[in-house]
Length: 70
Image (cartoon, one colour):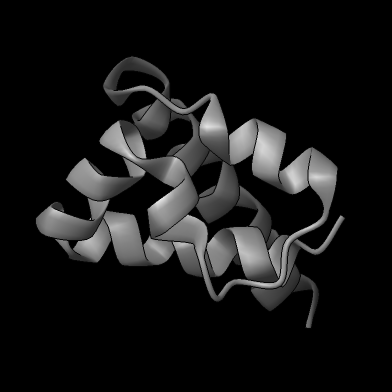
């Protein structure tokens, strides 16, 4: 699973409210053009406003760890 592709989608959704709405309401359209495997698509299709913040925070922790590990 490519964390970079998922991070790109999550980052865009966090920065662009219109994209976040599209991701929740029409994930197929929102994810068009992203190179995602089936597991990534399934995970992102399952996002809801309730679990988005948790996923975003989890992603932030991974990025922060990578940066500090250098």
